Length: 79
Image (cartoon, rainbow, N blue to C red; front, side, top):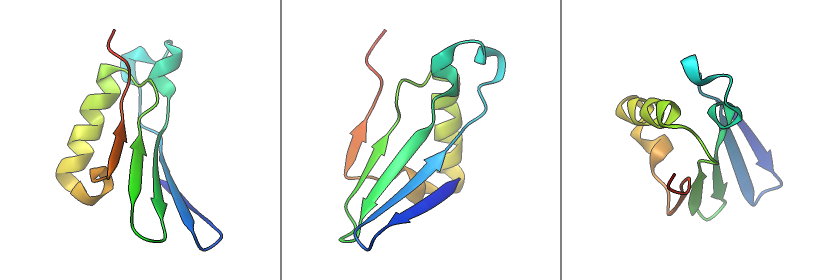
């Protein structure tokens, strides 16, 4: 996970998960972003990740629940 601080007002963390057997699909390599304001509000942007990557996110949440906590969650559209 990489974190970037933009000025004093915005932080961005990027998580690139392993796509496994879905790697040939472009959506399987999408990164997940967590944007956090200086006030502590946050949004988790999952792009158009595949189910394989969604499962990895849930596993990550078991080890680092704070990373998945957000005030706004943007998820992929249903297929």
